[in-house]
Image (cartoon, rainbow, N blue to C red; front, side, top):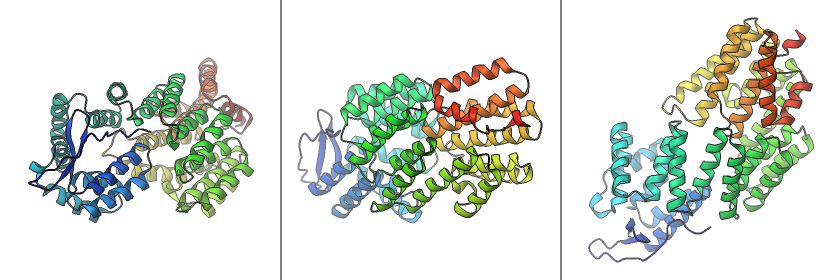
Length: 454
């Protein structure tokens, strides 16, 4: 991949003994006292564009070791320190105390924006971004900020507009193709999503993420052979791209191929730096899925209790299927307790109302309430909750999309139980158009609710 920051020159600034990275035609962008630190920063940005976050953090740490006053490196390092509150606060304070006059205009803007965020002044954040964009309408950094902000607010049309503008002015800002693909998935435009991801892969064939994104799409669509091939290519390129192991384990889980699943998890465990929690999380989800397909609700709960983290920490699928097992067994009070735990998760995500993870849990909570109401006999209220979950959930990511399909399966059963057979058939056909193999599992297995057998 070509670097998205093009070095045009290195300028000596006598007064401050700094050097500046210059992007073609736009003037100084990155201020540092060390050419070596500059190289590390550029390597970090290259790694971030590839979503190689561990590598990006290492480069940023080295950049700061070479130049402890490197403000932009500190700003970017903040993104990697979500679990280190003390160090984040230290960096915040250092950035706030920096001499802005020695920085480039873009750096000053980014610092002021960060300070407004820290002070919880969202109106000022928006004003700073819009004013800078007005002065620099083709700056990829601020276009990316606007696209990301629109995405986080659930404004997908706005996010698409800025991402399309981003690939026009900076074709090598390849992550924009990725976001265009997921935005198309969000709207159920799967052919368009595939085109964006294929463009992403064409421009950056040596990066893992384009192959991973295609793998997610193919998994959601039930094109499991293509998903496996794409995800394996991602791992060939970068053997420690953990998301692709998760997605590959998911494909084999959906295919009920325990041998292939175990082989993937064994391979994952052998890679240096592998998070053991991810391996066990995948193993837990697969075991719960297998027992759910068998309708073995008691053994499922025993398995989760003995082999998985407890509560929402077990992951979205395990929590959802555990709740369903309790409801299938008539243990509604225990099911309500799980719902309360999910509400607590929701409250912790209240600062980002359109965050993908929060959206998923919001949909899960509505789905759980619908499942409990249906199995306790209140079909009208159950339909309302399940329709609410369907409105919240989208096909934006594979986890969201599969949860949407699972919820639709429950809604099909409720509609059939209420005598709304035509509506149930239409919804089932909608599901089949997305992922036919998953619908086959639904039709031949114990169902989500099992209402037909009650």
